[in-house]
Length: 198
Image 1 (tube, rainbow, N blue to C red):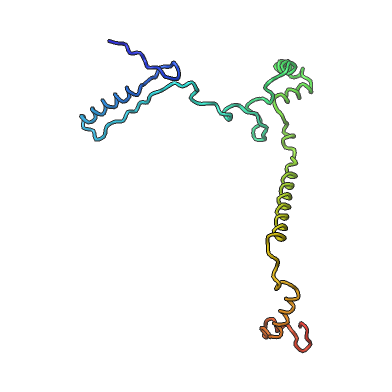
Image 2 (image 1 turned 120 degrees about the horizontal axis):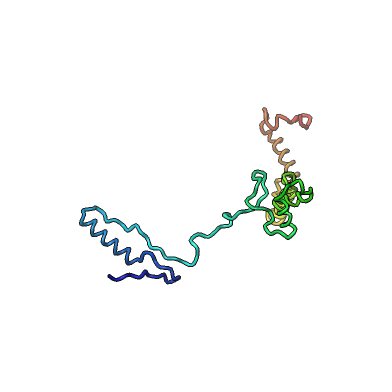
């Protein structure tokens, strides 16, 4: 009996677990068995073949790595603020393993700053972001005003003559002469004997 050597991938020296030829051969045999056995539909091949590639199957995304972030709702971040420690920081970390009564206040603060960037008081401090927001709002309102002013001068046609005060006065005089709505309307508010508004 011959010993079959596994086929190798073209990309790397890893063996191919199932070849396409083997899968199709098994499928044909199953199809014949299903047809002979009286099945309505032949079974499909359920096994796949694996080709080893030089790249890993799944790459690590940035979100899967431990991250540092200062947030009020997450008091302990995934990793410390400073990853790379100097010689003084390393000696301080060794000293941290001993009793904390031997540490001075400055050393405790330095240890805290190695682990965290900000304290809760610093995180709760009000920011000056509102200045940026208001500045942006005023900038865009001013820009819009300039565009509207430019359109009024260069884009829109001049206002019609019926908007002029002289034309409006003549129009009111004509409506009074015609006695428009004399019962409760426009002319009812004009005193024709005195020549003035009631």
